[in-house]
Image 1: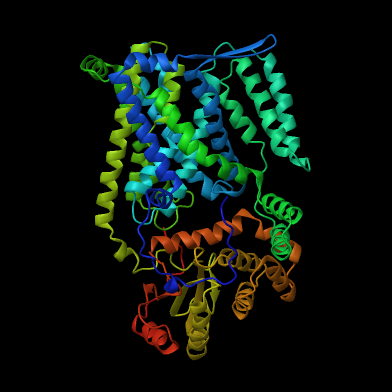
Image 2 (image 1 turned 90 degrees about the horizontal axis):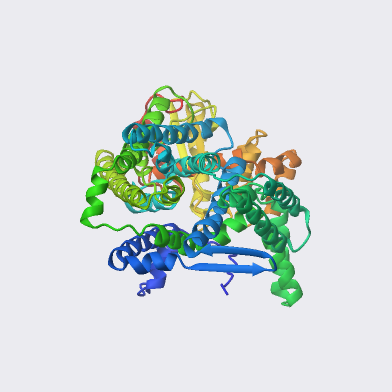
Length: 627
């Protein structure tokens, strides 16, 4: 059981020191992160499957052809171990994909047109062009219908590769690639359902429809929802299996009906009160009430994502790789693959098609100023991301078994997938290394990446003032509190010649309430009270819990109902996250960080130092947003 630590006062970054102790292998794995550790495990399982298939091919095939039979009365299910992995365990993987799809379209990156259009168009181009290239290269082979192999990007490997070889501050690129991968997955799943479904029997889908309807209404149950969700999931999966539609799609269908929402502040506060009650009077009743309240304050979508993620990363995907990546690589097979149109169609489709499709479409949109890119999402980084999109492992291998029935050609296709994924990884690494040399992070961090935009930024003072002071700060940071006095003094001295801009850079690792405070200030800003709310937050940094935030809104005369609604809106969260991604791209690791007339300020930030810097670095303000 994990320990729960209640943070009553947050440390400042300067006070946090390394403990100097030697870390165990388990510690290092935890520090690596689940995504990177899962990617390494997936790679290890792939290499193990290759070794097993090449040194003991008979036992490899024999093991995965082992039959398992489950009988209940007259009902009998017979699976090979290979089918159990591909049909049952992979349904859990596609369920997690469906949860992510639902979240992104409800409260994530795909909620607004300007944000969604860039990854959506890039994903569609990255689906279409690889398929066309595969058909062209494989024409005459008899396997042109296997174009689905090259359409999908492997999300796990993509994110893991980005963590290993990506640029120093990959935040905005990572968000873009994750959104692209979500749309990519939707396309791949749709194609599996439409193109690669055989022996279709519509009758069992009526049972599936009833089960899915019951899944939707399960959200209204007061208790035992987990048991009901699990039971209905089994029924729906069996119905899909009986219909001839690939049963993994049942996971997606169920996930899209699982509710997702941003946490309700009042519910969080109620959960905290119950936790305090348990702390004062420990008992099983209070413990259960506090645990239930904490759990219910987070949407079941996010709870399921966090609970299934370790099993997906450490069990499902490695087992899938072990069961599907066992390709014999002797001289005869490699020679056959080298002559195979299918192999070359896959390599060209994944490496060239994904790169040109993703990078070309985004470059064109950037040129035409279509959609929202954001600072840091430069053409060279988009090129690297486009290259990594050619890593098409999991779903590519999955479709190999669906689209090709000849064992020898399946081997050629798997060789093509493996080679293409390696080339895509190496190509991405080369592009990112060149990009880092052309644009050192030190140079990028010296200049304000996103120019001041009066339609977006919170500006105090005339928008056309000759002097501009931009602060990246944190409402729970003591140093930022001290800086407010300096800023006020600068404003008194310069008057109408100064425009001051606040942007968010909450240090969530050290200040757990700072993100909520930033979102609350944004919600207040929607009613024209951003700086009033800012002053209120700085006036009492020790009280920034949900109840305190609501009380501040009432004291400032805000429409509290609208304020609470805005607090839960994706737009407010996205606005704060944008500032945080900008800060990451400029390597802002401590607050406050000031930019004086567009240039990063180093040294003291007392009033006289800031005034001297403003006067020495005077330049015309740039009110327009970046291209």
